[in-house]
Length: 82
Image (cartoon, rainbow, N blue to C red; front, side, top):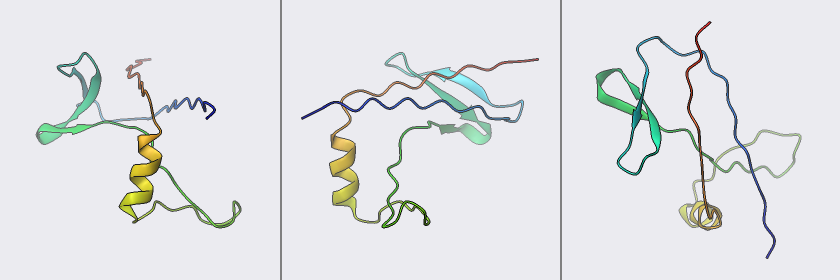
């Protein structure tokens, strides 16, 4: 089995009332209004042709098989003000 490294980096414009909160295991998530929380991570998308529309799967077994291949996941959140 070989290793595949995937790095996810997003830059987003978000409302001023979003905040970063630390979880009990030392990670971070984004706190949205009304006590909702947001965590951005991998979502596998599939297509029968790479030039066509990509969609997520509705087959839980396929999704779980892909997610079970993930050994570690790290997402870093930072707010930047200009």
